[in-house]
Image 1 (cartoon, one colour):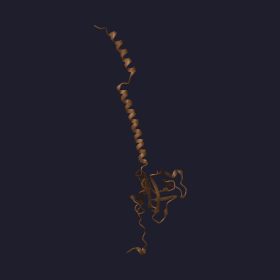
Image 2 (cartoon, one colour; image 1 turned 45 degrees about the vertical axis):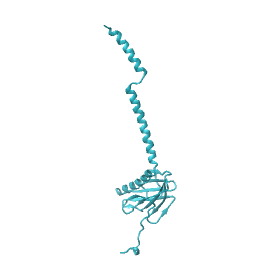
Image 3 (cartoon, one colour; image 1 turned 120 degrees about the horizontal axis):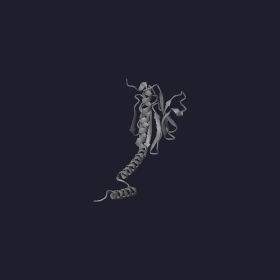
Length: 193
């Protein structure tokens, strides 16, 4: 028969030697899970950056900004303005809070974004015949709708044109391929009835 006092000290020495020399399976799994989580987060961040710089993502952001202005104005008594800077290739959405429409106050800005080289605004044409290919173009929306409709013509990385059409009558913002032609108002002598 063995004495249990002799076995226990030997086992305790073995246990302390094994735990001090390596990782347990649980520790190894936790380390692998943490590394996998960091890799997943880095991959998601990279895909978000790539997606943000694609033409479709940028043009959709501009369309959503225009829709946001129209919807917010329709649901309130406030006025909103989308300003497209063709020289800087930026756009912003602001809530108009002062009668001075020439100055944009910092606290009025709701959203501001920059277009990349693979999405360029070429020109803006309003439905009253005004046209600009430089400077700033402004679309104002109030409770009753857009002050002016028009189109924003953009080029993708292959220089293929797309048009964002702002319809003043029904507040619909649509994205169409090509440089679409705006409907022009008819004069009384041009009407058939």
